[in-house]
Image (cartoon, rainbow, N blue to C red; front, side, top):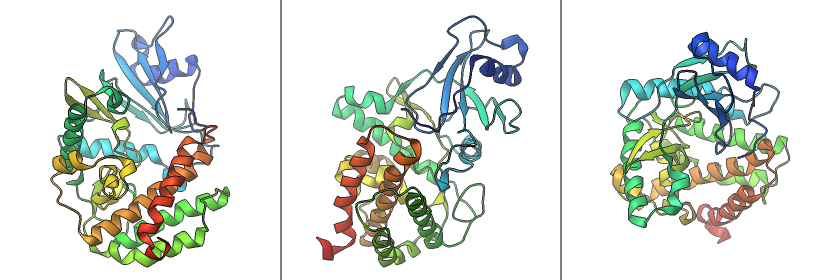
Length: 328
């Protein structure tokens, strides 16, 4: 996926980064030792074959001059913290971190190296699978997502702080950040920005039911899942995580908007019962936030293709009547 946030580097720069991480004796040489992993939407990632034949992945944060969404600032620090938490406190499969550098001495942004996982991307594989095969993976994902959500935080909000004891304040602030980002770049939502704020305010009391901060990935979709031989072998791309309500996880989105896919196998693996009325309202607010991000980010990414924007705007039209019965 093409995006202006991808901080591509020259071969010479990649060699310098590899030398700092692994030492001069493992620096790649010759041709064909680096290739870009192109399906990501935010950071650039390279698959690199070191001189001894070991394959690793280098992930580089966006360049400092590129404007990103408010919540994406410092995203790589968040990812490194999540990887540490998951390796320490869960059995959720994630890659090790071989080396991380935040000095900006060799590169104008943070970067880190991790092992290359030889597996299929579930998002790319999904269309080739029989329904039962995909359901089996989604059931596994539900179980892993529940374990991930078992990690507790002290406060709601970013892993790197600051936090807040109120989930209502944190989540409404998250939505306001996206709206402010959209207004700054004049993104057309198909409706008035203050009308969106009014919808959120009308249902914000549903957020008060959430009192325990839990680690949530938020961006845990099939495209961030690697599978091999019928099993999930790695979960990747953790830069959007925070402490919040587990119901905000992507696997629950289809409970309110069928366009996000059938949530049944995910719910079965997660072990989550049918949503209560208050949970349904809350999940609709989380869908609202997700759709706003999907629309606004297309402008910040510089997407030439409007497919994501068009899809999200149509889903917003589906969602608003569910939150505002007077507009049915």
